[in-house]
Amino acid sequence: MVCERCIGSVKEAPTNMHLTGIEVILGEVSFNADAQIKESTIEERLNALGFELLEDKKIQLVKQIKSLIDEVYSGNFEFPYISVFCICFRKIEKQSHCHQ
Image (cartoon, rainbow, N blue to C red; front, side):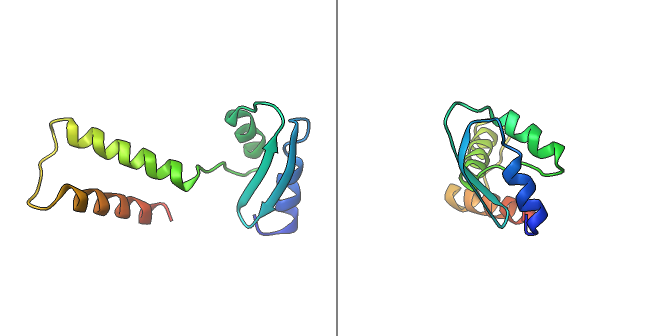
């Protein structure tokens, strides 16, 4: 969200959702929720405006690590002659570049 129309649309999207302190800065939205708001509700409102809700980078990283651990412990993973740390780092770094 870089143009004023986009920023205005995203600021107005959560009306009647009891959100306060809405701040929109170059592709990021932060807010305070007075009540528990389902992520799917926010996502639906943004999708209706043509925007997409992206996961936090920390959450993405945790999911990537969990996926890699599942792959390693599945029994189908063949360990090359390098440390497990190097494998993890390379796999996560490769996936991070694909999402940029």
